[in-house]
Image 1 (cartoon, helix red, strand yellow):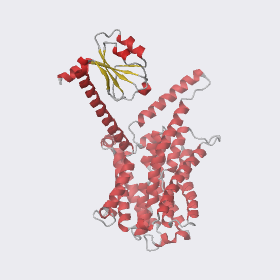
Image 2: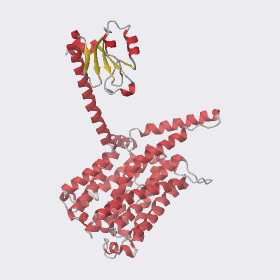
Image 3: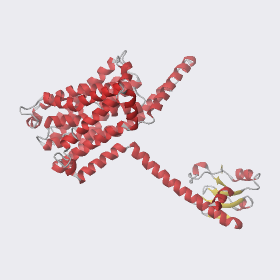
Image 4: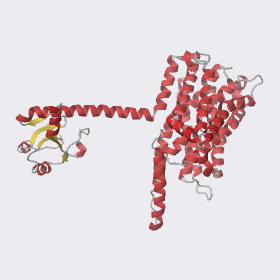
Length: 495
C-alpha cells in the first residue's frame, strides 16, 4: 500500500494535445499543453520531476524530441498504451498507470450509475407507472375489483382519500392572501379549465363518434377534459418554470372545489346525447343519472379529507411542515396515485377488457390526447398574451394560467367514474379511466419540455436590457433578485 502511495506521488501526469480532443476526461492532469514547445518550456525548471506524458492522437510529431528530455520518464497514447519508458522506471510507471486505469474504470462506473440514478429520480413516476401496469398484467387478481385486497374499498376509496388528505396537509393557504384579489386571472382559469376546455373537446368527440373508434374511449376523453387541474402537478410545473406558483396553487384548489360540483354536471349534460345512451343505461342508479349520488361520493372522498387535512395544517402548521418535508408528502401522493393506476389496470387485465379494444384505437387515443394538450396549451397562452389594454397577463401569470388551464386531475377522475358506474358495467368502468391515465402521462412528459421553454422565456424577459441605464440598473437588479429567489426555491422540486 505504501509503495502505491509513493508511486502516486512520484509522477506528474500531463496531457499533450488539444483540450477538445481529451478523451480521458476522468483523469485529473497536473498540466495540459497544446504543443511540444509549451511542454519543453514547462519542464526546463522541473529538473527533479518525473513526468509521464499522455499524447493525443491528433498531435503528429517525432517522439524522439521528447525522449531527449530526461524529466520525461514515460509516454503513453490516449489508449494508455506505452510508447516509451525509461528502463529504470518501467516497474513504477506500469504500477502508476495501472492505478490510473482502475481509477478511470471506477469513475466511469460511478458516472454511469449516477446518470442512471439521476434519470430514475427525475422520471421515477413514469417508471413507476410502467412498473404498476406490468405488475397489474402479471398479478391481476391481487389488485382487481373483488380481488385479494378488495381494491374497490382499500384503493378506490382508501388511496383517493389519502391523496386528498395529503393535499390538505400540504396546502399553505396563508401564502395565498396576495393572490386572492387577482380576480380576473381566477375567473379566466376557471372558465377555460372547467367550461371552454370540456365543451370544445366535446365537439371534437362528436366528430370522433362518427368514426369506428370505441365509443367508451371517446367518452373517456370527454371525462378527461371535464376534470379540474391536479394540485401538485400544476403548482410544481409552474414553480419549476419560474411562474406565479401562488396563483397556480390558488386556482388549482379553487378548481378542485368547483370541479367537485361542476365537472359531474357537465359530464351529465354530455351524457344526455343519444350517442352516449349506453352510458346512461348502465350508470349506478335505479333511475338513470343521479347527480346527488355522485356529489355525495366526491364530497366524501375529495372535499372532506381535503378540508380535514387543511384544518390540521392550520392548527399545527410548524409540525405539519416539518413532517411534510421529513416524509416527502409529494412523493407519497404520487405513490398513492400509482397504486390507484395499478388497481385500475389489474381490473382491466383480469376482465379482458383490453382484448375488445383495437390497437389502432389506443394509438389514435395517444395522439389525440397529446394533440389536445399541446393545442389547448398554445390557445390559452395566446389568449392570455393578447395585446389588449387591461387584459394582457404577465409572463409569470401566463405560465400559471397555462398549467392550471390544461392539466387534468387523475385523482379526481377515478372516484368520479366509480361514482357514475360503480361496477354496474365492468367493461365501461375499465375503459373510461384509460384516456385520463394516458393524458396524465403525456401531460408530465410534455410539461417537462414546456418547463424548460417557459423558464427560458422568463429568464430572457428578466435579463432584457432597457434604454434608460440608471432606471434599468434598479429594475434589472430587482428582477434578477426575484429570479434567483424563484430558482433557489425550485432546486429540490422534482419535475
